[in-house]
Image 1: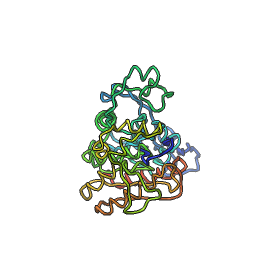
Image 2: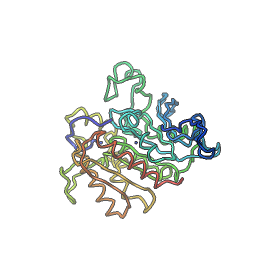
Image 3: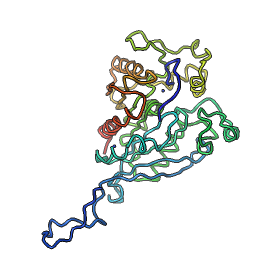
Image 4: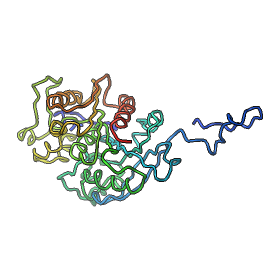
Amino acid sequence: MSDHGTRKITLAIAIVMMAAACDTPATPPQQAKLPASVAPATHGRVETQRFHSDALGVDKDVVVYLPAAYDSSPPDHRFRVFYYLHGLGGKQTDWTESGHLDAAADTLGLDAIVVMPDGDDSFYVDSPTAIDYDACLKDGTGLFFARRDRHGTCVHKNDYETYITKDLIGWVDKTYRTKPTRDARAIAGLSMGGYGALMLAMRHPDLFSAAASHSGVDALTYLGPHPYVAGQAKLLDDAALHQPPGDPLLAWVGSRFGSDLAFWRDHDPSVLGPKLPAGQLAIYFDCGTEDDFHLDDEARYLHDLLVAAHVDHSWFLGPGRHAFTFWADRVPKSLKFLSDHTKP
């Protein structure tokens, strides 16, 4: 769901009707409706699966939306795949329970599979910080939300980038009738997941052709000012990186990325994005102008950098806080964007 905590350094480091059976003699045969049992589906379906991740060393749950045409289409028909990543403190069911993604997809008539994995509290990176699995199970050591279901959250390794880009994609392409190519694959997310979507797509342009971020950490190393002032950005440096954060959230987030500034920069969308070749990746991001973590300032900063680097992108700022009251209205926008920028 949404990221929580006080932000001292701006990190945030951050949408049946089935045809009724009609058997009235007065109805001409050519106008008679199909019996409900053979009426074409108008809604996709949502299922939960479980698969093993070698990168994490555990089994993980994943929610999958299958479009209305999935079951009725010919066996050789294949579908695009969109990956949607949840936020810090959230879970894989957030997109359907709070974001109503399945309803939005039905309304759009989406002809793509949507995969919603469990990303725990990871920021979707292969963290340099090791984790003690037994200690994690015992008392939540290594977790930000230590009181969560530890048997569903603790992992043997913190390799979440590999988990998404290798294990998850590999399992999805083996399990479902997908088009296993970058032109038919895209990724999106919100908050921590918005960061993850941009970062993973920018680091793996061979895997994804489009990326979308809702209220994401669009500039990992951006410190200020707040509000944003063009040309006056203050960025994370070694001195700031090694200062005690003074806040449990910032300390824990910092532990995901470690003490090497180069690692932070290598995973920062505002560093990676301007280096993209023109037209390589379709990019969309948005944010509420009342974002609780001032992530709208990071969106403005990323926009300016991409404009200066002549990297085409779409973005939106509008009224809203860091919550599903903003994100649920934007989900149809990201689904449409990914649909428009992937190959059917």
